[in-house]
Image 1 (cartoon, rainbow, N blue to C red):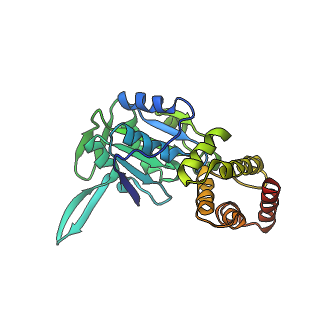
Image 2 (spheres, one colour):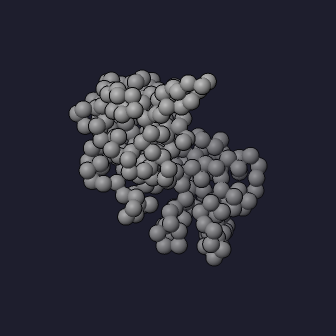
Image 3 (cartoon, rainbow, N blue to C red):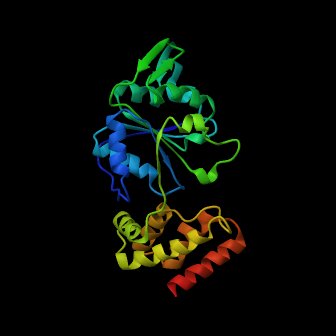
Length: 265
């Protein structure tokens, strides 16, 4: 399991609406928050930014097919010939009054939902069946989850009974002017050379759902800009950071390179 704990250095994040106020209000009132949006549009960075901005410890869990409730809660492990209980990231967050962020929560196994329900209503409790403990979340604890609605299918769909336990906010790729600022800030590439990258992204995103499953993420644009800022030729940078990550189909890659040629002249 990939669980990360962040410190309080505030990462850069460019607000696009009232999402920061919503987060703070949810946090102050002990309400869970669900972030919906495409891959690489800034959901994780937003949570990192808000955790640092509000001075809260953050436990981030990258959810996947094999992630079980025990991975989040904890388990007994054999250490030095003795059996010892070790808290999982969700349990640590509850004990410490921290933020627990479940990234792509719909990817986790279904037993995870059962664990989350008591934490997302007026009970705000976490039951540790193995130890017999029932933890009541302190005021500082906050549960944040995210998922990509575009990748949902019948087998991996968030049930309405779970979704309606959360406040929700929709994320998308920012408008061009904001995305230029973000990519410039994150990559160190000057605005004049970032601007065509953002124009290219707009054209590629118009193709998503047709030739592409999903449009190019802001994250990939930052990667491309970092390569260019480091001295790599533009065509090579875009091939490595945009064309190859977006598709394995040779004809679609050719179409993307043709689009790059049009944007860059």
